[in-house]
Structures are given as structure tokens and as C-alpha cells.
Image 1 (cartoon, one colour):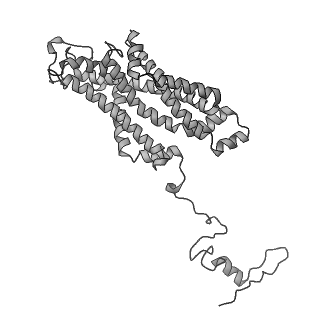
Image 2: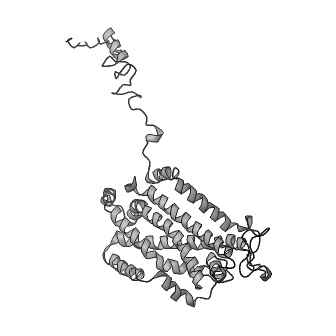
Image 3: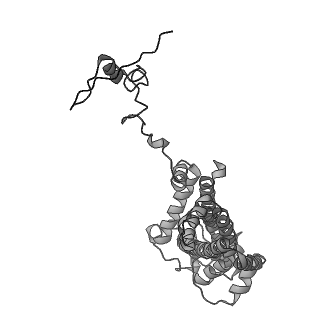
Length: 342
């Protein structure tokens, strides 16, 4: 076994730098281990210093946040891509239905009632002689408007009430829990029959208000539980120990980490609200003529299902595809945001 070599310190030169001997130059050239530049191998970097001591991480190995990681997964999920394309198409025809259906959905001709498809009328006519294709396209505006506005109202109201109750607790939490129990005991369809039967307006706002009134308890429960879980984390305790105000802790530290379950539930509920609007309109207590709605068309075509099934098939199919697209989108978002599924 060779004896370890002892390097002598270089001689001191007054007013200058130390002179390097042959052994010192060899150490600087090959490294302390004599195994290449930097001393970590034939071509390895110096582990003790130098710009090449810590290699830069590859872009794909860098740490991503929850939202960037979720977007990374969503872009590779075919369910999300298909549902997003369908929803984008629905939003476009809801904003500009004249792009693919330039006709007026209220123009009807009784002489063409219950007729099948023909040139310029691919879906045929309903029992009142209205073009089914035009009414189906224009009905997307009502359904998308009701679903989006009701979801936003429910998400905002439920998140605020549930978040405050979960953060402060105590008496307010107990009161909110009892109030939500009361609202959960009200059947949605029966409540719609009672509350909307006295409304004479044919606009979408009474229906949206009813959905917000009976829909916020679900989001409130989700937000409350998420906030209670988030406020027990160490970073919240550290912020409180550093003297952060309750409002800053709630908005800067708890809300960004507790909003993911609310987004998932709200996305799935959007399709449910669209189906609820069609159900209430079918029963005659939701939207009323002259409003154009898939629920109204389904209700009007039901008595003629044997003679003109096409008048019932197309609005029902559009409603089913829309609800399915939003539910699929919610499932994809849930899979991306739920860390337990990774």
C-alpha cells in the first residue's frame, strides 16, 4: 500500500503570491483526487467549488406548483381535451348562434308542422312549425348562460360563507352548519315547483336566483372542510406567529390552497344546473315562451313523439351532450387537482 504523499507548502514570496511547485500544479490540474479536472473523475466537476459544482436542473425536473402540475396533466388527458373542445364549441354558438343558424327561432309556419328534414332544415320542424335546427342552436345560449351564472353565484356565495365559518369557527360555524342542514332538507325539484310557480318573468334570472339559493350549501360544506384542513398547516401557524392579520392569512395562505376542491365541485355542478334548468322548463315553472330553451322544446315535442320523434331527439341529444361534456371536464379537473390520485 503506497504511503500518502505530503505536499509541502509553497515558499512565501514577500509582496507577491506564493510560488507553486510541480506537485501543487499537478493538484490544481487534476484535482485533489488526481482523477481529472475538479477531482471527481476524468472529466468531472469540482465538488468543492467552482461554477460547475452544482449542475443546473433540467427543465422537466424543476419543481412545479399545484396549478402548473395540474395543467401539465390536463394537456395529456384525452377526456379533458375532448370535453374542452365540445364546451368551447357550445360557448361559441351561445355567443354567436347566427354563425351556423342565421334564421329566427321564433319564425314558425303551421303548414310545416311535424315535417321531417328537408333542404335548409336538416332537423325538420316541431309541432308548431318552427325549425328544430335553429331552435336547438339558439337554445345553447340559454343553457350555457344559466349554467355559468348559477355556478359562479353558487361558488362565490358558498366559498365566502363556508370559508369564513371554517376559518373563524365557533358560533358562526355552528349557525352556518344548521342553516345548511335546513337547505339540504329541501328537495330541489319540489322547491323549484313551489318558488318558481309564482314567478311570471320569462327571463333566466329567476331560475338562476333559485339555483343559487338552493345550491350554495354544497359548496359551503366543501369550502368549510377545505379551509379547516388548510389552517392547520405549518405555514399558516408560522404566518400567525409572525403577526400576519387574519385577513392576510385567509387570502394569501389559506384561500389559494383550499380553492381546488371548490373548483372541482363547481365544474361538475355546472352540468347539473343545465340539466336542472331543462327539467324546470319541462315542468313549466322554469323558462317560459317566448324564451328559447331545450327544456321548453322537449316539453313541447313530448305529445308528438310518435308522429315527430325528431323534434324531441335533437334538443334532448344537445342537452345530453352538453351535460356529459361538463361532467367529463369536472372529472378530468378532479383527477388533476387531487394529489391522492397521483
